[in-house]
Length: 272
Image 1: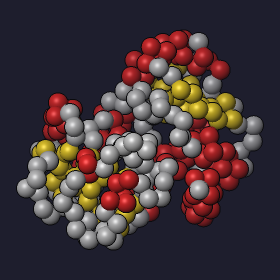
Image 2: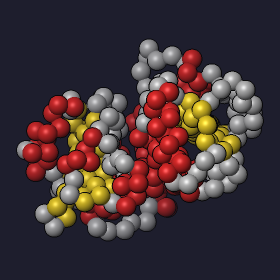
Image 3: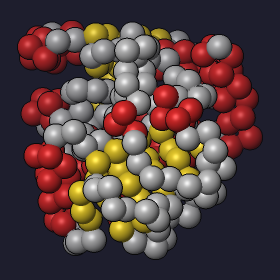
Image 4: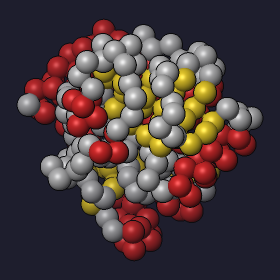
């Protein structure tokens, strides 16, 4: 079976390494996984031609919303979120799913993060931010604060939350002081010339920090607030969304709980 991830940029993606590790842990043979960098104007050609050679694909920035038009069926969760990161073939149809939400839910569980009633800042307003906002609402968050460079996109995310029946969501301003949780959903920090200025927010030692970036243990965001007692990168989300994708592609459920720490260590070694 042949799989891939499409996106742009994608050079720093560790998806092929992770999938190979998971195939080994799950005793899955005869599977390959590659990463493919596409331009936006190449999506049509990819789905009309190249996609036929794959059994399934993952989708990352900036195509999670753009691929929806190529799908025959969209999972209910992905339909609400308006974005897809996992595509499979079923009964001659192209089907889209969102496994990022499962991955983020599992990150919170594995790291003992309790959302209920908390004040949360979400940095960014893209497809990953929509997924995080949906998770927070489902888990009973008290208030959501959006910080994003594009005010228009921030308002769009605010309106998305309201369509889910959640109204205690507002845009960031410097008056906020008590922040229980801050989640970075942006790619800031993945490249050397990225600035940390966007992360100028009031946190204290008890504020929990989560960065969805998984390619470094100490991301730019997490380094900036090294006094915070609980700082989590996106590695667990990365692992569990990939595992969920494999389950969708192979139509099989897997239990990897006893080997998750081994998977983490192997990925950490690759990153080092």
